[in-house]
Length: 190
Image (cartoon, rainbow, N blue to C red):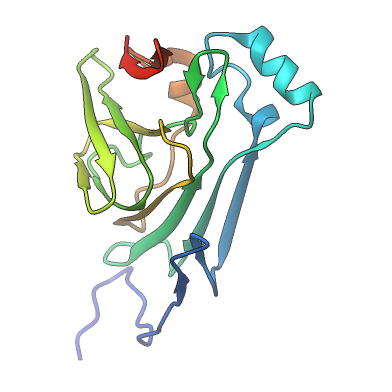
């Protein structure tokens, strides 16, 4: 067998999911983001501060399977974004570009409803509805963020190149072109 330079030989493995709870059972990585971790991402900072003072609720968590971070390997995860609002803005993930900008990501919604917001550094914007059974492809060079507009957790499965990495810093500086707000009881992208 000829191995590609820089790609480890690993054995196949199985990962179990609890689809009702929205978790990966034998995950290798677990990221938890509470309201306090979302400073600078919402337009209504005072509403976010009140939310933090009233218990700092969970916004989202990500359960990851992490093979070697190298060419040819594939990472995958379960993202569980809680329902809620900061002021009139729906709970969202921080959003990220990939550190290796020419890598894409695939998301499959398992439960809930919302949007996948995407943007490029030169100002292009796209929003795809996200609901059970919807799969959204986030192409290379596009930052992406999930937004939960429903009353239950928005649970998605995602997969991307292991060497892709996450670039949150540019989103913290640039923000997103548009937001998802509740207007007259319905989600509106503004």
